[in-house]
Image (cartoon, rainbow over all chains, first blue to last red; front, side, top):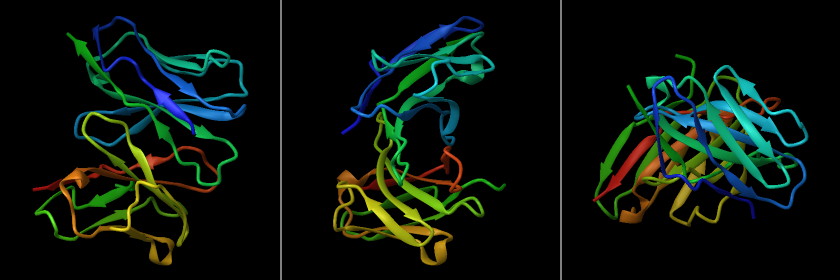
Length: 116
Length: 113
């Protein structure tokens, strides 16, 4: 079974600074997807960024980028120029490619606090 | 609003009572998922529908839980004889068949007293 681990229960960053959230996963599959989801307080979860394991290039979406290390099974999220609106729970998630159901396996989450 | 909607947003019930939650997916999304999220944890997969067919169920889905998706549109999740351990946020997500991203609803927070 696949597992996803987020070792940082809480992180704090100063507004406009950069922060990196860590995620490791365990799988025997060679092809899969990895995701970072953001869950603001009392609001629904939204996708931040996605990475296909077969792509060597790290995904980037505006201020959000990932550092995908396939051999190390590591998938960290870097948030640049942090904004107050970035404060939320962040979940790392995994999905097999050859999985008809496409269900996600989530990590335990990291609470990000942004200080003004 | 054309996103995933869930009803109710909050439910408080007494142990032993039955509860039912509803999820309305984004129109034309034929895949629908239920997840459970306990406080301070990430969501855990419960069950998955493709159209009206329930194709996968997690071991977390005990016999007291049942989910349906009649006509492949909205879905309901029923919990019979609720227990305090059922207290959690129940999330629904949907996606179209040709797209990877799951779109989540706001969730139903269940509190069992």
